Length: 497
Image (cartoon, rainbow, N blue to C red; front, top):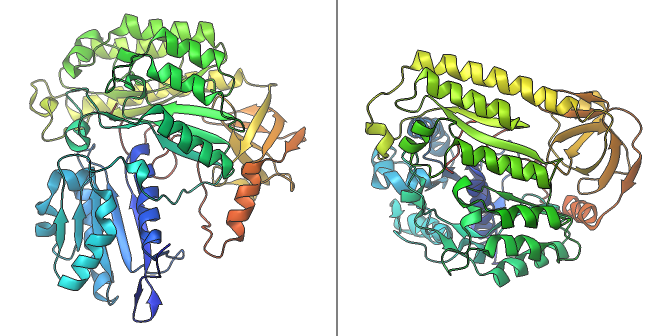
């Protein structure tokens, strides 16, 4: 680490506010690593930081209003805190560019999705020149995984295998902001995974806008299945997950690799978006209902206990009641363990924004409520099927908001279901406990009986070491789908897959 970055004889502190998908969450870990490598320190909870970084998302229609509202609230704070700087990065920064400093001239730095490594230099340049710095690159300067990273969790880690997207979904603005798909070489990925495991990481999640198109850049269509199998050979790596695949590219060799590789977990996030063939065509999603359900059927045949989750958009332009009924049909047939459900949000710059047949808000809301009610019913039924099962749960930090009151701890089962279990003093985040499921709710399981066993792991040791650090964060780390706050039936940012 470089010498501390100081101002008026104190180490400069930072806070990062993240919006959007898991890619943004991982980018924020890199931004934190860059700042700490430059000598900054994370601000204590409740303290006013010297630098506030907004890592933005551009997927929803109100993303702009949300950002400018937050910037407005921060303006008087900055005026009362000498030397404070504000930086805006991420997808919205890539899209809006100079607009940000025109609308919020108190912002010091604007940087895009392709040059997050420039943040420390831009902050220093803005401070010395006393002028806003706007730097947006049109293509990736270096694969982000080459940057220093301050990972939020000592026991679970994101590993990017690709960035960008070659799809052209009509509702999605992300490909124009993140660029065409760029793939890392398998050796680089495995080297990163092995280094993480050596530090104590027990679970990794492979990340990409479309993970199962991995290898397209270097002409190997079987690369993703091969990568999953290679992860099976990493000693000490107990859990492998990935997000998110695209039904178009989901092949039987990936299903076989999932089924035959013991540390690849029995969970799959498979975006549906719509169950209607005409709507899927209008979305430019290159699969249809029959193919989608066929994939689900083959996954269940190969991995009977797999928990399958999805993304669904309600109210896409032109969606009729019959189209919506087809979506409900797929939900009933697929029996997702949970779903991230969204009301269609018009995004300027996407083809769908100018389509005829925009569905009235009242109609969208009514359909959305019916979808959520159906999925809640199915989620509860599927969770009730877990009653009496004995599960190995990876203990997590911050998953159970009520754990203090209920005298429980929380973690994730192999299929990624959230489990709250009887607290046991010897279990640390990163350790593995064996429990029996005694109760099922739509979004979680409970194991209120005695804990059968606690397996202390190198991941738990890593958590203990992290807690002994003077600057250890008190914030918990979710092992589930990342987002802003807790994932729910209707999270704040829709899928861009």
